[in-house]
Length: 146
Image (cartoon, rainbow, N blue to C red; front, side):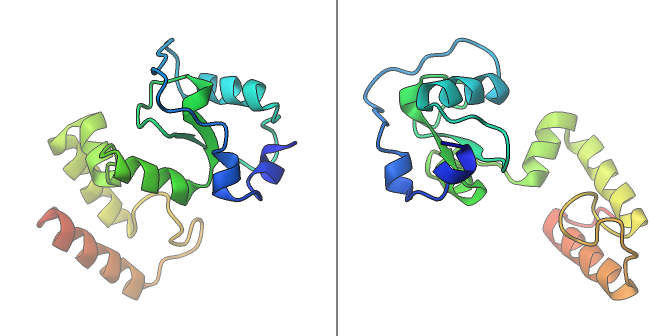
């Protein structure tokens, strides 16, 4: 069964193999490796519609297939919030680059008229109203970075 077909099953059915009482297995690697482990374990080829690799144990380094399941992006976010491992995009930016660099990146994005990525008009011209709305939102959220 393809992952895209697997995602059509109820979440409880996609999690029926979970056995979180067993210990986490940390073999190294990243989500790409762990995706392969789960695909082999569940016999779900991973081409086609992308699915998130969800960790029912909350340990993103775990590669125990009894702790992993295919899920949607929203299920993955809910899982990480439940386990206290979710970080906002800004928090991730700060972790990756440090606070000063993160603020600098935000300033550059404000000059461009919109934050990079996201749904907001990829490749489309930004209206002045949109630019003002994004700028006000970022200033409100991150405190006067413009």
